[in-house]
Length: 368
Ligand SMILES: *Cc1c(COP(=O)(O)O)cnc(C)c1O
Image 1 (cartoon, helix red, strand yellow):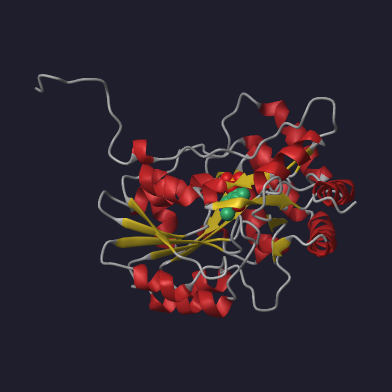
Image 2: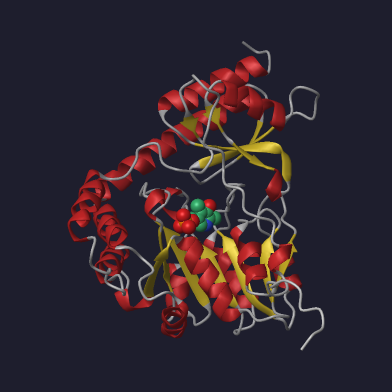
């Protein structure tokens, strides 16, 4: 036994994790809060989902169905999938973490892109493996750069498509080229958290690629378009051998009864989903155009949020704008942690919120 046993220490990698800092949720006191910091929908969930959530309160003493059957079947019906190839999780964050835990060992590498979702390096480090960050081109994932970063130690490639916080995406042809260039033992994880919002003919969330290969997983969430972030519901569509692995490592009751019931009701409410898509389509282009008129650069987004870039001038930087907006109730997301110190990410909100941000930024820049 060691002479100096010391305090309990976590395994290597854990203390290298930079803690995830969620978007702020408080505005200045006395002003109406418009939370535009976490890509939550301004329309809220489907009424049917709320009703199912309430009804679940009648049976709080019972454990949930450990295989989330009702939810998997509703997802399968909505997307034309086999329910046996779906695993549900406590948010898609849990699915991402389970995949990292199951497929990464110390010394292994997992690739993510320069401005990719922060959960990827966190899950990689927590698994004891090494996150490898790959340069993007024009704030967009670069297939050639990703392929050049693959080594014999690479086990996972994480790709958010569309990506958060940039809002950019890869057409399915590029995703296929990426897949074709990867060794067959590397797991390609396509995170399509914002897939429903994309209105582009050359985009696909990756369902067909999963079906046609043995090393691709697609993850999805109920936190964004379905408006159920509070309930923590995510899922993945994967080959049977990956499903088998996830079912071994996950908690036996990882999704609550209320989440199963509300999620199933939400995905059946196609009209609510359509309304959310229409609302976003309109206000995404309106807000992008109006901010452009103010002279702000906005990265073209296909998601339900935009990345706004600020002038590198005293008093006009992202941190100044952030403070100015918070004072007026508009809480955006600082994205310094994503390597974008002079940008803010704004969720497309209600009409009132979108118009309010544009008016406030117009004043902030001295244009009104
Ligand atoms: C919001 C988001 C998720 C969803 O996470 P949940 O755990 O399902 O709430 C996943 N990936 C990306 C890129 C996101 O922005």
